[in-house]
Image (cartoon, rainbow, N blue to C red; front, top):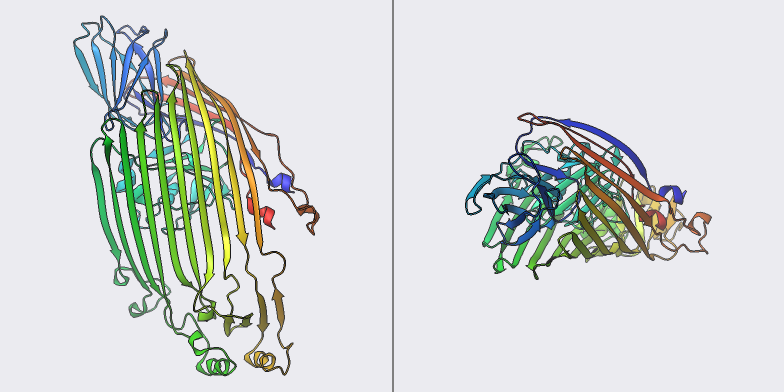
Amino acid sequence: MIQKLSSFRLVSLCLLVFALFSGSVYQVNAQSQALNGQIEGVVTDATGAAIPNASITIKNIETGSERQVTSDESGVYRAPLLPLGTYQVTVEVTNFKRLVREGITLTTGQTATVNLGLEAGDVSATVTVTSDAPVADAAKIDVGRVMNTREVQNLPLVSRNPYNYSLLQANVTGRPNAEFGVPRINANGYARRTNYQLDGNSNTQADRPGIRLMPISETFVSEVQLVTNGFSAEFGNTPGLIMNAVTPSGTNGIHGSASYRFRRTPFYARPFQYNSPTNLPTNNVDNLTFAVGGPIIKDRWHYYGGYEYIKRDLAVEPNRLVSITASQQAQLIVAGVPSSAFVAAIPVSQKANFYIFRTDAQLNEANRLTGRFNYFDNNSPNNIGGGANTLQRSIDFIDKSYSLGLQLASTFSTQIFNEFRFQYAKRDSRNLANANSGTGPSIVITGIANFGSPENANTLLPLETTTQFQDNLTWTRGDHAVKFGGGLNRIGDERVSGVFARFTFSSIANYLLARNGTNPRSYTTYIEAFGDPEIKYKSTFYNFFAQDDWKVTRKLKFNYGLRYDLYDVPDADASAPFSFSQDFKIDKNNFAPRLGIVYGLREGTRPTVIRASAGVYYDTPPLDMYLR
């Protein structure tokens, strides 16, 4: 059974036809670069003949960084692993006018096809062309989209949770969640099968499917990449949705933002379950954000930093927390339950802090280093639920997480490029007893009151660490761009379960019989946690892939490859009481072929593009099943 659950496979085929496309700057979102983009194209003369050995300069307008490339014998040029931003492409060839293409915006994972048609003339003469954004993506293989900075900054998002953007993607259904929550997502018919990424590194909790590891502020997101189908072989670990949140980077100009948002109870519409506008639940929210980015060394080294603070004051309305009558309270107080446990309402507050710092440095002409650090903490005291719970059942929820990510993009030659990524991330979430928490066994008087020690006090849920390495090498030669690589994700998980004993009584009278010793067994049920409350395990996920982006003709392009995933499992305990917990099987045949095709059927003012993709996809096993 474990072996069958360790991976999920999906074979998919999609065929899409797009029309109404104009311009010569095409976008191919093949999910080929999770934190970068690529510019490629063909250099031709007025007759359409290829021009080899053309000198091409690709410049990032915001940061001043440049890349020099040369067209090959077919006139083809490629510039992979480019930082995101707005670009200018300049080409110079003897006996041809100098051509400058401006306004080329490169988004996450995008390959922008910029074809360069030159006019005969003196190279001292310059022709400048401003590129407009295309109406549609005429050559992209995957089913997905990239939300650019303008969309992220201007779309209304009351929840302040950027993960809710996933619901804007085709093939995705579900419901959103508040600031620190996780939206409930179904993609391609799969529930909670989302591969969350942060700057291309894994941000998915390993113990449960479809849960993000670390919250992130909406302010700290520059772009959001959403893909539901047609992944290249480089990407996997889900048959559903890949969501990659990309953090902002600094530029040569100093740019910043600051905001203060507040919400108060009178601003809200009355919930349908409240029959009077005077008994609205208290819900006051204060939100402060600050961010700034700029140069450390112009054209070479830039920074970005930000902070967000959220405070939420909630109050449980009267008669919701404790529902027992005054006479019942009096009987329990006489029996030894402190009167402080019975309150009509208890205010609940929540405070959270988000931090980010990112730096991008052009170390030399061949190497660019990006470093990012995110930190989040959330303190929510007096979590208590509702109904029959008394104040003795309150606990404090503490959640802290951080992520350190590095990327080194290197140019080994005019044809060989390398991308190395590293991440160390940690999440530590706990339920802690506080000054209001009860002691002794947990007492439940059915339908009347719950008091005594909270059953989930002083638990660890979980403490998860992720150490990730990934290295990808790209080799461009003629009409081919071959890419291969591999990596590993080392996951550690530590849990501490609650240690408790619970007595359930059918009435206050029966509780009093046990309390005063008249009938110690007057309870209806007794439950006791036993065994080792602490568990630790480690697991490693490996991946290897090879793919080729083959431009067969100027109209036809193939992307094909093979991926292999190996999901190592925790070591089993041979002395476990159940046989299925004594030996965990490893699924070792997770080979995933991929194929994507793009064909430009018709050109002109209303060109038609046909694209199709097919592939086998595997999902990671949810590691919490090994805890049971």
